[in-house]
Picture 1 (cartoon, helix red, strand yellow):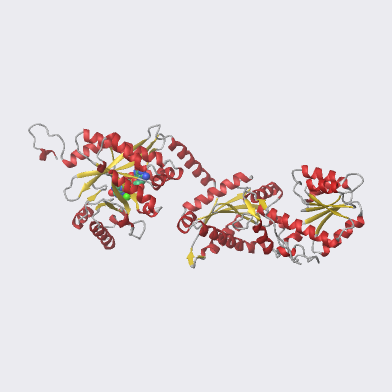
Picture 2 (cartoon, rainbow, N blue to C red):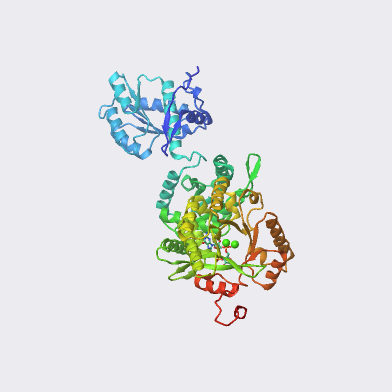
Length: 634
Ligand code: C2E
Ligand code: CA
Ligand code: CA
């Protein structure tokens, strides 16, 4: 006999989204319970391995003969776990204790009717979703309706035992499926975050009684966002599924340890996005957790396959231990995450145990970020200006504006220490706006002071481009301060041109249309592909100081510098050498035809007031005292 599964059932998943019945059919198939099995007339039992058989069935009825028969019958069909209750008064207590997945309930018992029990069951927070099948001598329409209203179906006695088995099985198939929706991460099939946190809490609550250590590993995949943005979300999802499988298989050996109790088994979960958490409820020592982390790193070092290609993805792992690093779930999780962040900043693809030193570093970082938020309003930011010198004429033709933070306690904080923080927190957008405004105001002031139209370059971070709004903000500052748009040079890095190419190009073209110049900073350190050079409207390349520092002694550096200059000139771009510290470097660059340089040999970045003196000094603009020829003053 065949049966067509003809429902349009939607099950409400834990995360509030609705899953169609086809999901259920797929699952039923994977559990070897084909939809066509459901109403085979001759009770075909599920395969012995089915998870449906692992659940507990409760049988509540006063007649031992009846409960015994039902139990034997279900046992013959493969079910293994039963709770039998003969006193209806105990039915609910017993259900609370054993948490059955299904209840068979005699509806007609002298002391307490089945309907009463059902009503109480449905009012009980912990028990309300247990499927119930009622059993009654005769089923009146009224009883059937009342039971249905309470979410139960009723079978009439004498029971058709093969029908009973099938009904039990069908209810449980749905129950197991629903549990799965509520407890599993749909992408990886791992226990979801809620289940993981419940387990973590219960393990930690039981911990004082244990002599061993509990370890929490927080596993973050390195640069996963890059994979998502370059290959698409679908590739990312598939990859996460493969990562989960590989993590699980690296656990398996640990899992098979002889004599392990169920309650000590490790639990792996996808805790969110590209992050996994692993709980080892019972390890002999910290070293065991370290070994586990090492095993995961080894397992992940083999490439993953996507679309016939090899993909490499590495994890960074933070480890926190109970009781030393925390005894409650929140502290332990926070510390495992802090240790993972440290593992990432140590170069990724590694693991790190939590230590109080990490905690104080992350507290310091938080304090710094909080302080930085108020830096603009408290007027703690300032710009220093480093002269840009024309190698041919020796004249100062421009400056690069470099940000400084005058921290009340820490003194002058260099940008390397606070710009990454500003970028991570998004504060850089507001700070960047401040930089543009101050740089334009400074150009206007210098013009008024009579040192001419000095070009000023500002540095822009990726986040500012991504946020949009850069073009109108710059246009507005230029107009307000009345500077020539060509005086403002915007410095970008190569990586920024590789990201969201079309949107970025549109913004750069708009900046160019305003009249601003565009410069590529740290040229040669980013991407090897140079095709962007012809796709973007650029004016200037800045040779990174790492290439300059080796010259003139290192012939490879000389060759690279020479090649960059030739490349830039053939594309009609201006070339600036950064980090020039010696005369030999300056001479070499001049001989190679480099246009401009900046570096300590001429000047460190200077406060605006000293800068003006330096311009006058270099360009010979100092007003000559009467009767003294200007050349004598230089
Ligand atoms: P950058 O844009 O590559 O800036 C050049 C860095 O080289 C500056 O470091 C400068 O002081 C340093 N430098 C200049 N001449 C020499 C030299 O002869 N030898 C050596 N060894 N170094 C030299 P600084 O001021 O610490 O800035 C570091 C980075 O911070 C900048 O690198 C830039 O990426 C970022 N930054 C600075 N100001 C801003 C800003 O306003 N906005 C953004 N988004 N980033 C900024
Ligand atoms: Ca720069
Ligand atoms: Ca640079």
